[in-house]
Amino acid sequence: MNTYTTVPSGEQVVQELPWRWKVQGRIFLIGGLGFMFDAWDVTLNGILIPLLSTHWNLAPGDAAWIGTANLVGMALGAFAWGTIADTIGRKKAFTATLLIFSLFTVLGAFSPDFIWFCVFRFMAGFGLGGCIPVDYALVGEFTPRKQRGKVLTAMDGWWPVGAALCGFISAWLVAAFADWRLTMLVMVLPALLVFWVRRSVPESPLFLIRKGRRDEAAKVIDDLVKATGAEPRAYSLPDAQDAPKLSAGSAWLQLVRVWRFNWKITAAAWSLFFSILLVYYLSLTWMPRILIGAGFQDYKAFLTTASMAAVGLLGVVVAAVLVERVGRKWILAITGPLSALTLVIVAFVVDIPSAAVFWLLVFGFIVQVAIPVLYTYVSELYPTDLRGTGFGWASTFSRLGAGFGPLIFASVLWPQLGLATSFALAGGLVLLSVLWMAFFSPETKQRTLT
Image 1 (cartoon, rainbow, N blue to C red):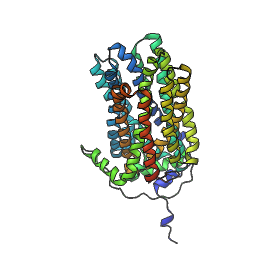
Image 2: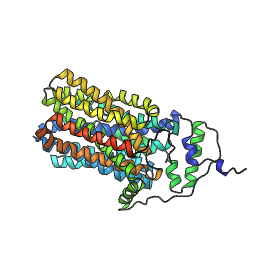
Image 3: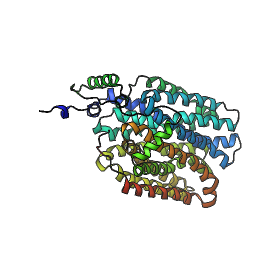
Image 4: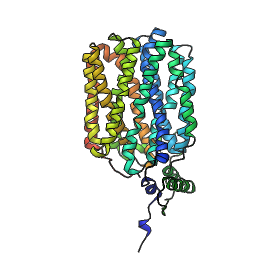
């Protein structure tokens, strides 16, 4: 009897382990906290726009650079850290992102003028931009295959938590102290604490296998088997595969590899990321200003935006329940366009406070069904050696859209076409993206990672 074919690979062993909160759950929690700060920082742009518009007497087009500088920094960070994570390892990249973010957030809080503020927000965004692609790659590679869809979807539960914390805490700080600097400084200390905790996370065994570091990979796998209480069994470790080398051109080479892997799949990933997140970032960036213009007081506008984010936690729960039952593609096809439609309704009823709040809550729920499924879906479309890079480049494309989209929205579309038409145009992009996905991108439910 030939037993060679019956010996599982180390990757299979990791993906077939039982789920344990003290093992994989701990990595999920630590990774999620970084994701929470990403949400906090993006939401903070919407808080800072009306506050700094008053502080530095900014026109809407100038104020838009508050979000644009930060999100473009995140865009560059997303592809840079995705490539770095695929090159030097998930763990090292995992620990560095929040440290860079914290340093430049402090500098931004003490900016002498608006230009320096934008520079520091760009650099803070660059550090934080690595959180999502690196966190999803690391958590996904430690999570058993049967739970992976639910766990990666649940990762996005940290987003409404971070966004809501930003809104509620900022509303309190503005009402109590009327100092925009405190809204930035308040998140630095917990970010540094999370940076310290991240140092204890092991390196991804799938990454170690790809790099040919067999002894290290075997130790991590054996430790995981022991910690989860699984029955030890023999497994094979393949020889090292060609892995990207860190160099000035490595990001470009990885980009080429992502498109050569499957251009139709990559086009689907990029367009979904760009369009769905554009709709969400438009709401986060400009909704406080829109509500204030409709007659809301500052702190009430911040509380309403925070509530919109907080109700998204229910959306994440629904997404986690449905993602393995319905599949990724069907959920995205329904919730993506529907979220844009609800935002158009908000634009029509924004002068009616009760109706505006109701439809914003509906929007916050629906869009947070779509986004975690989107993150799960794209993270599963690529093999291990391209997962961080593939997700990172898709995230980069979305952050560029999220950065320049609100700038174009405030400078051109909103003044010329009106609020509802501007939101409807963004919704049209979502519809085109899900149609492309339907025809050219596969379903990934229950797929084994390779």
